[in-house]
Length: 452
Image 1: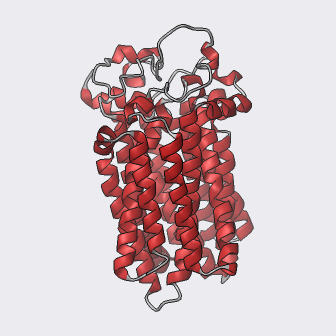
Image 2 (image 1 turned 180 degrees about the horizontal axis):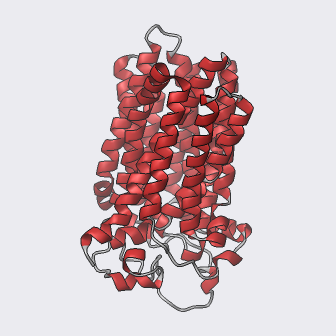
């Protein structure tokens, strides 16, 4: 098989991921600022964003069930095409002067509800796609995280530029074009995988039991819930309150976000090297300690030097840990449970964000901002302690093989089968990089060659 054919699914998925993430992050600016400028009400933009986020969490929770019922390709394509159609409808409504916040919020929720299932349907097959392209899985996830970081750098300025120069209609039209482009790229590149035998008979209760039974995945879910909750609260509530009261607060906030994005890109580039040289508890523990120090630093100073140092201390470990964590969740669970376990864990992690924002708002009314930031830093430090005490002392590659720290029986679909642990695609779990996997060996879990 030609290398160009082998790499096309990976290149297509990365391109679609970059376009989708750029669109998602621009939407927060375009819809939020645009609705504020158009209606004069900050609640209008908040309604749209809050409704979209709630729909994302709900959709992610049921991603595994949807993938089991309809297949990964159908769910992945349904998500991007629904988002593209919704973005187009919103642009048309705004073009004809119909900017009702409630209706736009409903449409935005419809567009977001399949975003989680679509992403999981794509990412659950990253191990197979990496093998087909003869590419390292952690590096593939690092590239994916790098695109997210690049979108973080580009989206705010681009969104503001669109809204200020072309208005809400122009911004919405640009989002529609991005959504359509992402849908076309994914349609052309996403392979046709065979459905997982028996996955549709698994209940969410069984998925929850399997997640709790795997000590590593259960603790990772708890730890990432803490991290996501803290940083949503810090970046969306605490830091704006600290900075925006100052004369140059908007510039400082932008500087912090850009510096954090650059640091995350650097971390993603180094992720594979750190994963090869450090054990999993040491890598995650050092990362959480760095996050704690970077967060606590903001409690004492918000000068330019302190902001840059905090951005580096928080952005670099985020970039390192992200690809590694994604690779573990993509390879460790039994194949029949993979989509469901990713969905349940993702929903639990995302659900921490609105809780953290609400808690931060209440805390800021009762406590000084510095004390609240130190509380967040203490919570991250507690996470580092949990990592060193609770996680098994294994390498990243061992953690990806799905055997360490598991108390439950193997894949319930294959209960009683005495076979070696296998990852998606029927290839031995120790082979994650595709170096030894010709096209025909992948056919156990997917169609051969171009259609996989």
